[in-house]
Length: 461
Image (cartoon, rainbow, N blue to C red; front, top):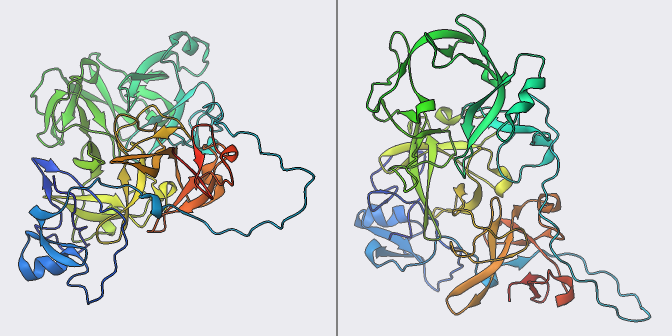
């Protein structure tokens, strides 16, 4: 498996910019190791080698080397000597009657603070979202499309809650799927008839599976043809417009313009290039493509927006608060979030991400490995065996043989970003400048019970 890939630039795509992984794309970033040389470096990046020797060469430790001879290393880990405690002023020494160890710090219960967003207000559906962007109790954050998410009334587990509504939202209906479990998300909705107004952001939908079938187009319900069979043509521009029967488990595959078995996936969501063992394929919506990422040996497929490599900035301005650029991904040109400092800079909703440095020293938002069960502050290793719940990332601090160990933490820019990691502060940093939530200590008593004091900060045993 190729582990060292050159990050493409905004210039017109060259065939060597990204290297395919088997039959699909696998993007990796080099480990952050510091090297020094007594003589001038032979290269500073892969392009130096490709221009001189051809696309089969890459830059490794300042020398050009055949890609087939690159060493196998995990995508992204933090060696113990790379976790550096942030410098902080030492407190003045004051005499005390008796030295008393501080009480043991243990992770607090995993509770989600109550959200503040009201019905129909915009929200963020990422795991670990702060209360000021989360929905109030009884509501659920639903992605309306790749750009918008709204708080709607949740009836997934109790359809009877809709009967008390006085604004017509009396029917409990499926509008989306949970991106991790693929269970149906149901909300209280009102159904409009032909030529009446519609607005999915306020759960005002068009009557489905009736004669005629209706879809929301231009804020009004219009007649459409409901496609019931796999393989039927779902291309745009037909008269009347067509729609694959989502109630029957169909969705439109925009790469073939055919109805297939599956569920729609928006920008940033997990997707599937082939049918998974679950039998339910997640299919990117129109104008998006499914790209593969490799994180610590685990492949994650994510929907990214198609773009124009000739206009790398302008063709990726679809989301206002996200800093994005068009990059060449094999034969695809797709928008990625760039110049991040921590996870908080990754604004596109969907699958949780971390800030990762690529081989050309740029930083991009990179999908985390598949989620595990370890919670904030608990032990982890960067494998599927003991991985972290999203949005936490495994902060590796300890090497035992070939095994890497750490605890579930977050990337951060300030202490407030560590609020969901009890007792942690933003006091660690990597060599690339990305900071991490850590536990300062002077003895084991200062650390969570599953960690020990490594001198100035807590580490995995």
